[in-house]
Structures are given as structure tokens and as C-alpha cells.
Amino acid sequence: MLAIARNPILWRELFGILRTPRALVLLCLLVVAMTGLVALRWPESGLADIEGNRSRQIYQLIGFGLTSGMLLMAPAFPSTSIVSERKRGTLALLFNSPLTPAGIYGGKFFGSLLFLLLVMLTTLPTAAASYAMGGVSFLHNVLPLYLILALMAIHYTAVSLAVSAWSNSTDSALRTSYGLVLLLAFGSLAPYYFTRGTEGTTAWLSGHLYHLSPVPVTLTLFGMSIPTPDFAELTSFSDLIVPHLRMATVSSLVWIGLGLWLLHPNMLDRSRAAGVMTDDRKRSERMVRGVFMLIDPQRRSRNVNRFVNPLLVKEMRTRRFGRSSWMLRLVFFCAIVSIAVTNGAMRTSVDRGLGPVGTILVALQVTLMVLLTPSLTAGLISAERESGGWPLLQMTPMSAVRIVSGKLMSVVLTLLLILMATLPGYVFILAVAPEKGPEVVRVVASLALVALFCLLVGAVVGSLFRRSAPATACAYAVLLAFFGGTLLIWLGRDAPFGYDVVRSALLLNPAAAALSVIGTADFATYDLLPYSWYWTGAISGVCLIALVFQSWRLSLPE
Image (tube, rainbow, N blue to C red; front, side, top):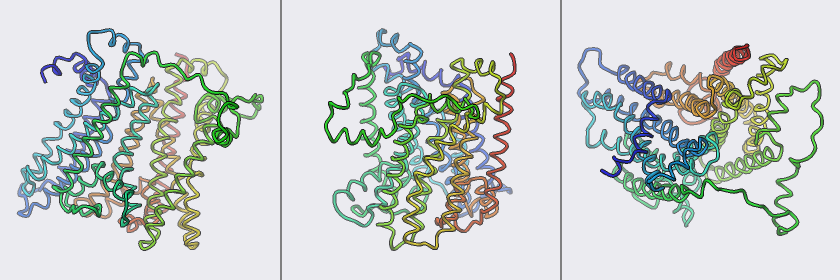
């Protein structure tokens, strides 16, 4: 421990994080949110109820808020820690210092971990308040909650550092880190629900993968009943914490080992593969490449039509997901995943109706939108300002409206293809239940509003920054906080939030409207349409106006 405390990288990393405005904003928002949750349920007379119901309600809300905050904050800083050093050219100086690669990794790992520990310490007063009201045990409630949070911090910091060591840009590192964290937290639950009630090696593996997620053990800690793998008798928190601790520890060690393996001086001399000519490949490989290369990205392009926005063409030809070959790959991937998920869900949901199938599809599509959209939209303006391309746009005769429309349309086409690629799953639903046609139409309309909302929020947040990395991180934080915050209020339905409060919060979330229409449990009771569409459209309109105004302000002569 003394050697770790003397590591200069640790304190440099910690103080560097604390000096960033993002860290201050995240800490302040978390403290305000936790204090507000306590104030909502604090007894007005100063006397707590004997049974401790209010205390347990506060404890549950604090637990949900802390778990969501950890998912939001854990990847934010370590995911860009190593790749930003390499982009600035300071990583070579670190390798030439007396520190070993393990020392460099340890400093960055524990520096990021200490910041997350500071985040948890700022929430101790709210946990103490719920404990002081009675009904909450320190050993059985408060301490286990912070143990789970510590495991999440260690696990997701290791994941983010490994991604940072592998990535070539901060944008891709942020996008990949958040995607992997959400996959480990929620995606690891999906295989179990597909193989539930079956036997064999697949069911056994999915049952163990189920314990990799902190969600089941957290819900059990809050007193909620959840389905557990059939191969083990797991009925309480003490039964679930041991397998979760084992799986989280093994996964953390694997990611730490991967990060240490990637972090070596040779990574600075990483060269591109020479490649192999297509004619020299095997026949099977040539057939696969023929499918994925239906459109040649190197073909000679025609001149830009005078009625076409030149910025739209520029964005589509310079961005990876704007190129036709990559868009086809993305569309094929989304379509295959959609059909596979629907097929697997329907095989296990015959007796439970089509509600679970639709819920899985909606969750898949919303997750894709939230993961991909900020990475595409946050850098529309900030990347131009960072690379020096914005002064060139200022010298063109294009107005702010034309600049914004060209950049937004380039992302709209990509999102539209992704949305259409995930629609084949609904064909299965219509084949089984044709009477579900009107519901499917309303769900698709709600998902289109989700894409529009994510597009405009990510673009307007990104326009406020000069660099694309903090713009992307902030866009992810805003979208995750928005969708997660409204669902946090939904989790507190009946206690402490009433029906009207929960419905008002869900009206702001277009994903909740889609879940309500598809018949998801505990969402169908709220009548959200068409008012949810009105609110989402109004918020999107305000974001569009703000984006145009910000672009016009930036286009003025300095």
C-alpha cells in the first residue's frame, strides 16, 4: 500500500480528474440528487414511523441512484486516460521514466478508483440519514450496498482502462467503454432469460453469466423478488453475493491482465497489417467479403449536385459510419441481432405472451440508439472546432441553418437505417399476432422519437464544447441521466412517488411510451400516448432551436 501511495501517476491522475469541470458537475449533481431524495421522504414532524417504512423507501431510492451513478461515472475518466496520453505524446515520456508499465497502469487504475471512492463518500450523509430514521441495518443494508458499489468501481475501471489502452481515439474509447459496461451490467442477464427452464451446458453457462451483473444482487438487497438460475438454491442476498463476488473478481482480473498486456512500449509502434489480396484468400473468405463489400467504398464519386448540401456529402464521405460499406455492415449486424433476439425470446415466451418479446426488442433498439447516437452527434460541431475546420466553414457562404441541416441529415440517414434494420423482429410478432399491427405502429413511432431526441440532445450538448472527447462524455451523461432518471422515479412508484408524479416523469421519456404500448409489466398501467409524443417533440424542438442559435453564434466573426 505504501508503494501505491508513493506512485506519482496516482496523484497526478486523481488531481487531474478533480480539476476537470466534469468531475465537479458530476459530484454536485449527485449530492443534490441524493439530498433531494432524502428531503422528499423526511418526516415533517421530525418523528419516524415505528416500522421504518419511510427509511427503507429512502434507502431503496438512494441505492438505485448510487447504482445508476456508478454506471454513469465509472467509465467516464479511465476510458480516456491512456489513449489521451498517447494522443498528446506524453505516454512515451512515461515509458522512458523509471516507472514500469505495471506502475503506470497501477497509478492510473488507483487514481480513477480513488475518485469513485470520493463519489461514494459524498453520499454517506444521505445513507446515514436513512439509517438514523430506523428500519435500516448498517450490517445488512448499508454496508452490503457500498460493497457492491466498490465491486462495480473496480470492475468497470478495469474494463475502461483496457479499452483505453486498445483504442486509437478518445471518442471510440468512450463509446466502447460505455457499451461494454452496459453489456456487462444488463446484457449478461439476457442469455439466462432465453435459456430459463432448460437444461444443459448452455443453461449452466448463462446461469453463471447471470451473476456477472450487479442488478440481481442489488434488487435482492432492496427486498425485491427476482428469478434466479435453476441450478442453485438462491433465495436471499447472502446466497447471491458470493457468486457475484466470484464472477466480478474473475472478470476484473481478466480485464486487468488484458490492460497490463496491452500497456507496453511497443504499443507506440503499432503498425497496420500489410493485408492480403482478395484473390489470395480462401474461397469461403472471398464469398464473405463479397457479401460485406457489395458497394466498393473506393469507387470514383460523382460531382456533388447543386441542390445537395455539401456538408452532408462531406460528412458521409469522411465518417466511418457514413461510408456505404460500413453502413451495410451495421445494418446487417442490427438485422441479424434483431431476428436472433426475437427468435430466442419467442421460443421461451410462448406461455407468457408477446409482452416479453416486445420488451426485449424495445430495450435492444433504445440501447442501440443511446450507445450510437452520442458518438455520432457530439462531435458534429466540437470536432470541427478542435480540428480547425470551423474557420473554413465560417468563410463559406453557407448559413448556420444550412450547416446544421447538413450535419444533422448525415446522422439521420445512419439512425434511420439502424432503426429499419431492427424492424424485422416485429415481423415475427405480426406473424404470430396480426392484431398487434396498430400497437407495432405506435411503438415504431415512439422509437423514431427516441432517435430524434437522442440526435438533437447529443448535437446541442456537443456544440457547447471545444473538444470532441468531453463533448461525447457529456452527451452520454446527459442521455443516460435523462433516461435513467425518469426510470428511477418509476422505480419509486407508490413509495415515495405517487401515480401522477411517476406518469409526469414517464411522459418525458419516449422509451417509456414504447414500453407502455407494447404491454410491458408496470408500464402498461400508465396512459402516456399521445402526450408523451407532444412533450418529446417540444423538447426536441427547443434543442433544435438552441443548436441553430449556437451554430449562428459560433459562425460570427471573432
